[in-house]
Image (cartoon, rainbow, N blue to C red):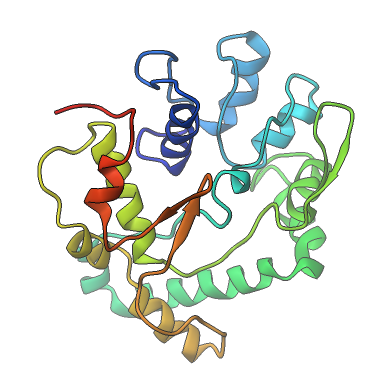
Amino acid sequence: VPFEYSMHNFLLRYYVAEFGLDPDVDIQIRVVPPPEMVANLRAGNIDGFLGPDPFNQRAVFDEVGFIHLLTRELWNGHPCCAFGTSTEFIQKNPNTFAALYRAVLTSAAMARDPKNRELIAKVIAPSQYLNQPEAVLTQVLTGRFADGLGKIQNVPERADFDPMPWQSMAVWMLTQMQRWGYIKGEVDYKAVAEKVFLITDARKHMKDLGQPFAAGGGYTKHTIMGKAFDASKPAEYLNSFAIKKTA
């Protein structure tokens, strides 16, 4: 996985635990920078990886691995990459922060449109950006890809760029941090989620840009591997797992 606090780590832990494996006992999870994942797979240093595109597809392209499943099969619409800054930066540079936020939202809106995907692949392929074969990026972004098992898959929704920072997603992350011992003791889920995930700012800037956005609060329902998650009942959710670290 790319980082101990990444969604990739939490999704991998959730996945193996659902099948009865303790991720801290039955397997070994290592942190490996995504650009180094394919080389480590080729060398036999790791058995597999749950990491960000396009490195999954690059392993197939290089004929050193196959795609077991897409993380959307675990949680369709799960959060992944994020635009984040410190509170201090926002307070000292409000106009710069607003400009950066609008740039991210504009880029996300462009990237969500399927007709732009092949152009984006061409633009970000060169060495000054991702330094990856254009064919790899095109497969990822269009969702028509070789799976490494002899089949061509067609999953147009493989990658999405939804800019809504749902606070309920933050609450889920906090439950998993507690579950695996990354944080201990009582947690004010709501306070932390609403301090970090600035959904009001998102809606304001999306409105200013004339972009459609989901109205209402910062909480919505999610389904992870068939199990519903209600952010208003995080303690019940956390206690429902058979495999977790005990205090």
